[in-house]
Image (cartoon, rainbow, N blue to C red):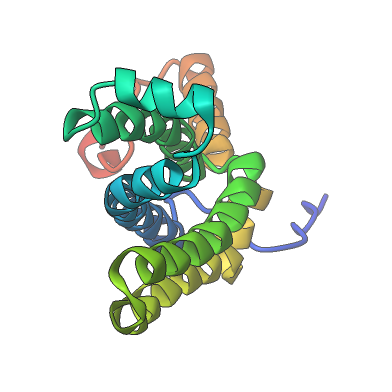
Length: 192
């Protein structure tokens, strides 16, 4: 009896480099976003203070708070912590082939590029934004391209490592049934 021919490409047993590229670029985007946020924090606080100088309750509250170098950090650090959690989860789950992480990574890549360019423009000026914008765009395109590549799409379609684990489990069951000694992957020559 003939075995059925598998329709579609063979499963990927190693994470494709396009997904590695997307993960690395997401990490770079994160660090650039944090650096823009740190530069944006003091400017945002000065803007809020200038707009609320006439408001009775807010201006009194601003006078009561210890405004100085620790005040912007007290606001920025919790925001960085809140930003770190989804980034870490998305980057880690991209490597595991999770489709939800791919969707969020695509959204984050586009949003981060826009936020980064606008943040650099407002914080450091338009000239600096013109210099930094191509870097943001290249990073965003690298994430999008890595996740949209043929091997990237296949990686997420097959749910990452799942075929490798399934093959490994089937090999282990076969070895137990046949009574042969279990040989680690890659050491098949040493079993003879």
